[in-house]
Image (cartoon, rainbow, N blue to C red; front, side, top):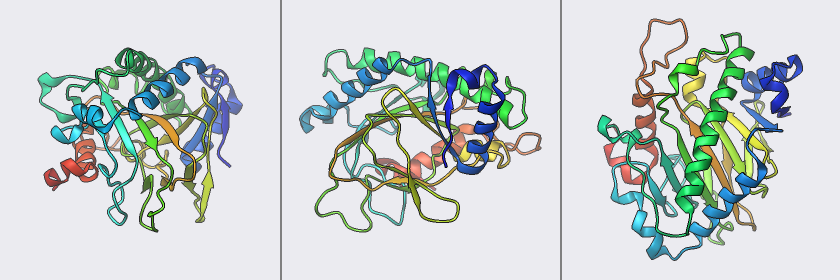
Length: 299
């Protein structure tokens, strides 16, 4: 079972909450959180903002189409991402934004693209991005403590995070969809910690260790947490990245993941090893393999 954890208790160091996080991180790769510092009303405003954007005419969304760029910023239409090379490109739509540092020349810090509509979209999303990043730093501290590291281990490695905030729009599963068609196909996340808010509509499925799938959902204002390949590598397997997917159903669904990743020059090789694996190198390689408009850059 995926642990459901009182966030205030966790951040206060409650032993039962810490034990539940240790189990969730090392065995399941997923948690759900309630009683968080982010108000449910703010999450609902963010979901409403993304919904208003995704309902715009395609021509208006195309003004911020990430396919025109060499980065993961702006709108990605249906089939703009392929997370599983053995499946067809995903039929969802996305809108991505993140930390900007264009002076670095790194595509993981590219300038954001903001639409003119809906009104207030940028302000709503930027405010949530700031709050979600701050919360994620605290969560990583609690996770570090739960696996036996100093709670402050990650603190200085996320002041210029390669954190990507995404709005996902999953339409109804198309009538033409076959066995290789998904809202998002089976994958593991690429980075460290994913803080996922949803509109409450079911859809996310997590692969069980013994095979098969388990559904996981959270009401608006609660969060689903999972961990990516980078954190699994960084912690030498003490935190696991678990495959998950969205097949889609007769219901539309909006989800809002924050993919929280460290500064570009962070060494994410296993703690205590002599290896060097730069966070930006790992993340950009995975982006180039996934975004259809970047796939010609891969390899």
